[in-house]
Length: 159
Image (cartoon, rainbow, N blue to C red; front, side, top):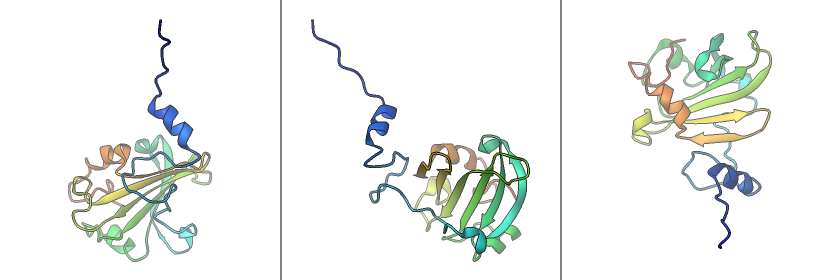
């Protein structure tokens, strides 16, 4: 009788490889941990474009939205599509007053036809507790944002 070999799941493989690389939906080669789309001190230069509000689409977190200073005006004015290089950062909070940060979700507009099925946007998710970061064409982001194409360039809500 031949002993059965254990089947490794994707989660087990990812866990085994975390010391060498981060598991993500990013198909690009490069560093094991992607750099955030936005600077760590983004609040000093980015413009808050949406006030604190509940978001059922982001696991029931309350969110604040910031835009890079070069493109915040276009976002606020609804001048879609936003130009390549635009960056939006959603700060996820655990409380209705938006004071306890749980994580960050950001999106960056690429050049024309860099990701045509998602309006040329790429996403990142950073969990502040686990420090895990995912980047790329994230199915959870694309699944919601592709339903928001009617004149809003995949941004989903007007300010």
